[in-house]
Each structure stands twice: as C-alpha cells, then as structure tokens.
Amino acid sequence: MSIAQEPQKTSEPKIRVDSLVKIFGKSPREGLKLLREGHDRDSILEKTGNVVGVGGVSFEIQQGELFVIMGLSGSGKSTLIRCLNRLIEPTSGQVIIDDEDIAHVNSKRLREVRRTKMAMVFQKFALFPHLTVAENTEYGLNVRGLNDRKRRHKALETLEIVGLHKWADRYPSELSGGMQQRVGLARALATDPDILLMDEAFGALDPLIRRDMQAELLRLQDELQKTVVFISHDIHEALKLGDRVAVMKDGYFVQVGTPEELVTNPADNYIRDFMLDVNRAQVLKTGSITRKTIPFILGHGSAQTAFEQMQRYQRKEMYVVNQDNTPIGIVTLESLTQALKEGKEDIKEVMETDFPKVKASTTIEDVAHLCQQRLPLAIIDDEGDFKGVVEHSDILASIGRLQDVDEESDSEESENEPQKIVA
Ligand SMILES: Nc1ncnc2c1ncn2[C@@H]1O[C@H](COP(=O)(O)OP(=O)(O)OP(=O)(O)O)[C@@H](O)[C@H]1O
Image 1 (cartoon, rainbow, N blue to C red):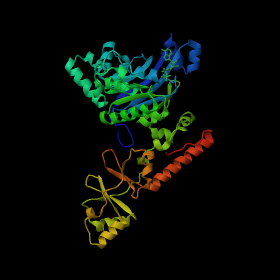
Image 2 (image 1 turned 30 degrees about the vertical axis):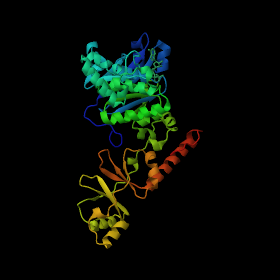
Image 3 (image 1 turned 30 degrees about the horizontal axis):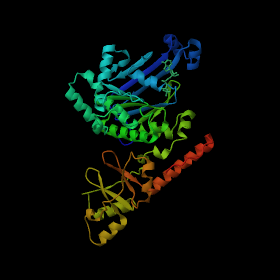
C-alpha cells in the first residue's frame, strides 16, 4: 500500500460494478420493476413478497486495492460479494472484471474465470477434514491439470507464505481456528488469483487471533498486492484493513471512502453513529499532520551553508537527505554553531544519524509514544523518501484535537462515555 493507503491508480479499474441488483423471491422481475419505479425495500416486500438483497450499487475497485464492504446483519454484504463471482445470480446490472462482464458470460467462461481470476475465503474455513493441510491447500489446483509434484510444490510454497509449511502433513482437526483460517487463505492464494473475495473471513475467530489474522492479511497484501473485497460487520476491522470502506445499509451503499474520510467526514448520522465508537488516533495517519520542510541535501554545501539555511527558515533542527531524498541524519542549530566554532565544514561530521523515522502511513496512535523523543520525527513515504517532519507538539495537539472532537460528538449526539483516545 502507498502512503495514505490509497489504491494504486491504474487507468482501468480491476472490478467495476454497475447498478447491481439482487432480488430474492418468486418474481424478481416484478420486484425489479417496482424498484425502478422508486418503491423501497419494505414496499416491494409487502406488494410482491420479494426481498431486495442488493438494491442497485455501483462502484469501482482498483488493482491492488483492499476494499471493505461493511454493514450490519442483513444489509446485503454477502449477497453482493456472491454476485461478484455469481455464487448468487444478480437480477440485473454488470460486474466488469478486466473489461469482461462476468454477470453475462456463459457458464463455461464463468467456471474459467472463477478458476483463474478469483478465489473466495469463507468465514467457516470450509476445510476437508479427511485431507491434510497440504492436500486442502492444493485442492483448488486439481482442476488446473497440474501433476502431483507440481501441486505439492505449489501448496508448500503457499503454506510458507502464510507460515504453515511445517504443518503441511497434519489434519485440520490438529490446528487452531486461526491456523485453519490460514489454510483457507493459503488454499485461495495457491491458485494465484488476481482477486480475493473474503466473506467475514475472520468473523469466527477469537479477538486476539482475529487481530493476528488482520495483521497477517495486511502483511500479505503489502507483498502480494491482490485486489481484495473483504466483507465485515465490524467497523473497527473495516477501518483497520480497508484502503477504502463502503458502508452498506438495506441493500445500498451509504458512503464509500478511505477510513480517514469516513472518520473526518461522515456522510450522515448513520455513518456518524458508527464513528462514535472509533478511536480516531488509530485511523488518522501521521502523514495528515506532517509539516513539509526543506531538508539539507548532502553535497549541496557545507556546514556553513546548512547553518545559513536554518537561520533563513528560522529552524532549530534540519534533516539531511542524500541525493535520492532519503533522510540520513539531522543537524541542530546548537550542534552546527559548535561545529563551526571548531572549524568543521563537513556536514557528515556534524549530523546525528540516530533519529526517529516514521512512515507517513503510520497511525497517530502508533507514534504517540515517540512524543518523548528529543528530535522531531522524520516522515518518509513507502519508498523511503523524506516527506517532512512531525514535532512532538503536533502529535500532542492532534491527540488533543481528536479528544475535543470526540467529546463534542459525545455531548451532542450520544450519551456514551467519552472515549479514551490513546492508550
Ligand atoms: N436466499 C435468500 N432468499 C431470500 N432472501 C435472502 C436470501 N439470501 C439473503 N436474503 C435476504 O437478503 C438480505 C441481505 O442478506 P445478506 O445475507 O446479503 O446480508 P448480510 O449483510 O450479508 O448479513 P449477515 O452479516 O447476517 O450475513 C436480507 O434481508 C436477507 O434476509
């Protein structure tokens, strides 16, 4: 993932869903007609006995994006994700994957797409009890016509990715819930799908194991950059995992945005109510409070030049970057003054090389403990490029602001206890 957890931008989205509708019941066409005439879910149910599972949603997902669909029970999440691979047949609308409308391909082509492009991970791990971990993992490869040796090799390789290669010859019953879900994930990954569909994949796990699996998914995603559609009914999980999150209610999307957008700019009271319970410091990124500052570029002058630059910008500290914009040290006005008195001209002799460095995508909560540091934090992007600094006062001020926001929203809109922002 890139700095602000933004999806990689490509010209064409990996998945484009257009006006997708799913109506359950005996006469979905009749339901669809009423839906198009503007009748709501309740009225369609009353008039026709049909249930609107998904009432018409459109969205795009970029290659490499982790897109979470979050909503309460019955909001239509499972129906929607199953329409993407047609485990549930959509009533109308398009599901375009790589320029091909999956909602309208014939069954032969659909089987091919399912086999080669997407894999699904379920909440109940759906492992075969009589097959070993490796056999379960290679299950999806059987239909690909690979020979036994190649299948086994691929299974072991994938189990290694999820940290389970030593368990290859054990049976599912010998594994904990978290490990079984890793096998479920390995089975999905073994086929090298472009798209992972994860339906409440961590919903059956204990909270601690669930947290581990969330971290594991983010780690894998960093490495593999799949396009992931992840269903969750847990707003915390959604905000933690999603590059973007769609909040679903009664078969529709209420808001789609980055976690930061949802937290700072909720579309309506429904979304705002979800956010009341959210620790904003866990969502907002250090990048959002970074001060852009001009660093000193190594090779562009002496200690005297750096001193003059600091005076000009009235700075007490300044980061030094090398030619490719990687921070490599920091100088303080004090150390420079002293060095110049001693006649030192080489900035490398003056700079401190032990300094706090943090990625812009790190949450404010995760840097809160660095408030005690003497030096400002150097903020870098995922490529290691210098982006600016965060002062300790910026962290404290942002936490203060977050607390203010929380207290305001609590007093205005709910009687919940004011929440603690930073542990
Ligand atoms: N096979 C079906 N026949 C009739 N109605 C259905 C069917 N499947 C789902 N529904 C209805 O469609 C609506 C959306 O259900 P869906 O399972 O997609 O919601 P969900 O958000 O995934 O809920 P949960 O988190 O409880 O799984 C619900 O009103 C549900 O009762």
